[in-house]
Every structure is written in C-alpha cells, then in structure tokens.
Amino acid sequence: MTHPPDRLSVPSLRGGHIRLTHFPGDGRRPVILAQGLSADAITYALPTLPAPLAFVLQDRGYDVWLMDYRTSPACFQTGRRFTITDIAEGDWPAAVGHVTRQTGQPVQILAHCVSALSLMMGLLAGAVMREQIRSVICSAVAAHPVASPMNRLKQASGLVDALLALGVENLPATFDPTSPLERLVHRLLWLYPNRAESCAAPVCRRLRFFYHQVVCHEQLDPATHRAFAYLWGPAHLPALRQVAQLIRAGQVPGVQDPGWQERVNLPITLMGGRLNNLFLPESLTRTQAWLLASGNDRALYRRREFADYASMDCFLGAAAHKDIFEWIADELDRGHDAGRG
Image 1 (cartoon, one colour):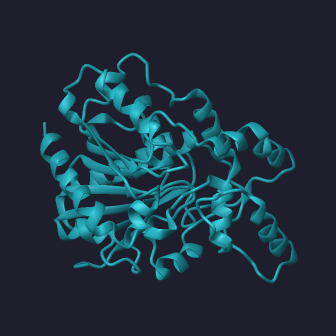
Image 2 (cartoon, helix red, strand yellow):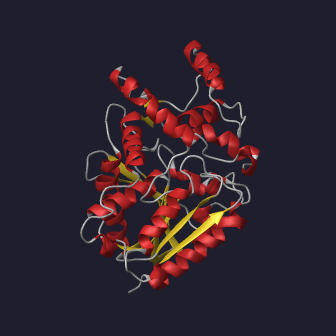
Image 3 (tube, rainbow, N blue to C red):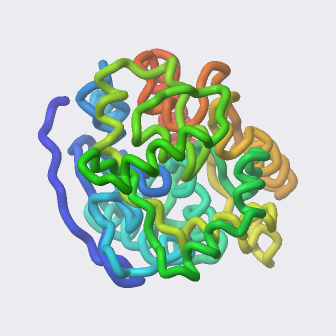
C-alpha cells in the first residue's frame, strides 16, 4: 500500500448511509469494489492476505473505493428494515454519484454476489446511470440467480417467513460463548448438512446455514480464517426474502424491459468459482447468453471461471493474488480502454 485510506460516510438515496474507503490513485481510473450480503468491504484490503486486491489495484494505478452498503457491519442499523431494491436504487446511485463527482470520471465496478445482483437491478431500472459506468465485473452472479438445491430447499421451507412472523428480522453471524442460547444454537447447527465443509468455527457454521457455502476452506490461510468472525454483519431476513424471490423468478427485474440493451451496452465481465454452491455457475451462463443476445458488440462481454474456488475465497484465498487478482487488474485495464467511448 502506497497511500493510507480515507473513510467517509455518504447518505444513501433511500435513507441510511453508505461508507466509502478510499485508497488514492490515479483519479482518471476510479474503481468501486463491493462485497456480498452482510460482508464488510474490508475483505478487499484484509492485512492477513499476502497482497489484497485493493492494494494490487492501487499499485497498478487505480483510484480504489471500497463500498460498504447497508448490509455491511460498517453501516448496518438495527431497526431499519430494507430490501435489495433499497441497495439497487439507493446505495448504488449514492456510491457511483459520489465517486464520479470526486473524480470527474465514469467509474469501473467490481461487485460480488448480492452487490452484483443489486447493481444489475439498479442499472436496468435506470437508478444507476449508464453514462457514469465505464465497465463492470460481476462476481458469482449477475442478472440471473440460480441457487443450489440446498438453498432452494431452505427457501421452500418457509423458515424466513416464519421467523419474520415471529418478529425476528436479523440473525447474527457473531457468537457469544457465554450465552447458553448461543451455545445451544451452535450445537444445533452441527445438524445442518454440508459434506463439503466440516469446519467447526461458529461463524462458519452460521454462514453455511445462512448462505450455504461461501468459501472453500482449503483456499484460506489460518490468519484469514480467524479474521472471519470480524467480517460479517447480521443476515437481514427481509433482504434474504427478496433474494429468494429473485431466485424463484430466475432473473432480476428489467431484463426484458424496453431499452435494456442500451443499459448493458458497456464492457461487462462475469467471473466466478466453479465450486460455488451459493449461486451456481449456471447463474453466469444464463447472464452471458442474455448479454450476447442483446445485439451489442459481443466483444464487450467476457466470462472467466476459476476451477478451484467457490465464492468469497476468490478474494480471500491465500493464493488469490496470483490466481485471480492480476487477471482482475488486466480485465479492468481492458474495460478502461474499451469503455472510454
């Protein structure tokens, strides 16, 4: 890291606020990095990693802005109910608008998981202005969410609706070992089936229950794994309910609305891990086919699959700086050049 980061709070267009953490670079090359539902954007600058993505991009000359939106522990407000639409039409326009005003340049964006879903929703709805975006990288999912069988089973169970009916809106990812109830919950979560991962850490068991598989543990070094407990906010059930609705629909709103082709007429790259069991790789296959059917220049749209990765380990893996980050920087270079028109 060559420059210390600046942190600032920016009002969302739908109440609340977002936080932007700025790693200064060439102001002509701004890029926003956003994480998945309830994750802290500091994952892009985690000091346990040999070379975090934010620093790799800063060293390549990019002006890096980490975006924490309303689901992040940095911005989460207990008692404020929200949905993915609030992120799409409130948080994203606030972030993009602020960065473009500060730099005088259209932005490039890397959005992971639910932040990618919400970005596509905002772009297709016109809440995020196409003219302010130079290029986009969507990680794990984009406009066509396809869930794993286990996640579909959980949705069909009606558990989220039942908890909301009981007045439960948030499920914490943190674990209090002094609480008998917390210890009981931890033991019960041992019953949740997941043959691929057998980690006993309380936060990992909760994340598997909330979202299913978010990482391949084989990709994590011990220090990063220990940091997991500090990287997650509560799972907000109204937002999760809308994600389930999007999965049942098989697409985000607006994918066939008049003028959708022009709203995605920009460089869009799709990336993800082949082992992702939160949103299946088929999610990106469907979005890729949709983009290629737009009639726009087919060279605008690219896709890359990483064989030994799942979801968040694409950014937290001990070898991700060698396997993925330099490719991301190259892809942003391509998007910067292609998006200048």
